[in-house]
Length: 387
Ligand SMILES: Cc1cc2nc3c(=O)[nH]c(=O)nc-3n(C[C@H](O)[C@H](O)[C@H](O)COP(=O)(O)OP(=O)(O)OC[C@H]3O[C@@H](n4cnc5c(N)ncnc54)[C@H](O)[C@@H]3O)c2cc1C
Image (cartoon, rainbow, N blue to C red; front, side, top):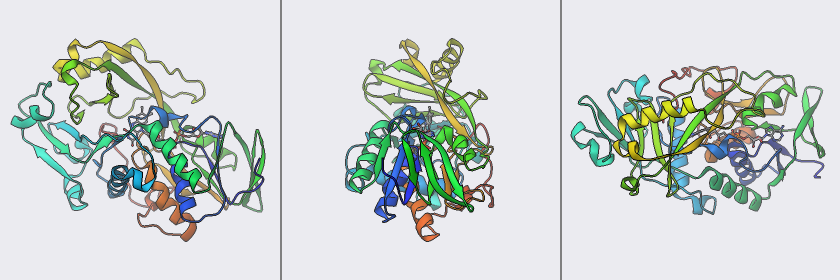
């Protein structure tokens, strides 16, 4: 195995691979990604993969706007096909309260997010098989959509490899050597690689990686259910993602034959990321079904196609941890995305690479430093990840 590297990235999810690409593009030298399984093996593979800039914090809006442009011009920027479906994102709401909406419309407008308010009488234009209450209106984010997370990450990986990145699949990092307060090497189940710089992109396992240098990361792993349905014939013409802010559930297409649905936010269900039950319980299935049926008449007549459970790497305030951390020189983190790290995955690395190499970046990632230094407000349970 390679015996030295300028940078080692631990984890080949969308964040690790995106960073590898941008570091290579920025001329960071020899870059090795170590992945215990394979590219997009973790929660990235199960992501809802929605790309929509509905937020109340500027940093997310700017990241997702840039990511949207990257998805729109993917072949030119990275090459390949991320499976991007840009049919819009349609939020049904009974309030424009920033916390409940999960987005600050004034801020979004100022930053150039294309959206339109949909009056009550026009709601059925965007979701013909739904029923609406009299106090409900809509918000349409016209440039939003979703991608295929496995295609996206593998396409990024191919681009990274073309730029000289080495991706080692099936290699587990087992330790990190530190001497004189400086990272010296990683040890793996396939040997040792000397390096002065490590970026921990291990997602749900990133606290275990940080523990290798004596750093405690405040990340808890929680199980998240998603249900699948056969796609009703009446919903074959795909419209925008249906994001029901009143019932707190979203539904989007999943290929030609299926729809997937999940609730907003998260529920307390701590698990071990290596041992968790990836199936969905009857109770979870039924409660999601109730939420979906309440809105969408077509769904009441379509059979379930099962479902699955995935995991979120939750931080205390539901914001990620990005930047150097602890007292060990050469140890950086990009993790704890708490269920929101797909959309920006392909472009966060551009800014993080600039920060690593030059100490500053076009989008300042310092609000994501840990411990927090700025005024990043915690995301309220109901509004954050307001799909
Ligand atoms: C159900 C679900 C729906 C979601 N929907 C959305 C959405 O609509 N929009 C959005 O923006 N985000 C969404 N997210 C969140 C987003 O998918 C994640 O934040 C993102 O994929 C995390 O990527 P990552 O690269 O940080 O981590 P991961 O995908 O967890 O990758 C980490 C990798 O590190 C590897 N690894 C761990 N430990 C080691 C080790 N010791 N040695 C080597 N390798 C190691 C793992 O095998 C894994 O492959 C969703 C997530 C889930 C689960």
